[in-house]
Image (cartoon, rainbow, N blue to C red; front, side, top):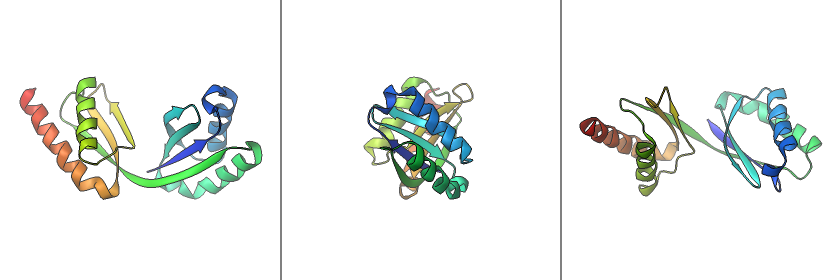
Length: 144
């Protein structure tokens, strides 16, 4: 996966522009998931197999939405964690444990009624992330 950051002044206050951006992604055949909206930018994740369709999206944005910048981020790896129930507190514990060890997740999602956690990390941090996650799952199984 990789992420794309779409920047435009006060984008969060303009629903029509947000809707148009996602329509342009759809028209270019780029399925994505929105991971964050800030006042001046939107961040989405896209599967690597759709990277070749990004130029069509960039051309459409340049043509229709003047003053909009699109930034392609690095690829990242999705790790799936199962075996314990993920309460909000436990998800926060996973996030802070990773960050305190220099692993900054791109995305973190609870799935399957809090039975699964998906974490997106940089490839360079993969081994550290896996080690930390395994330790936290082992601790979670002991305390459960």
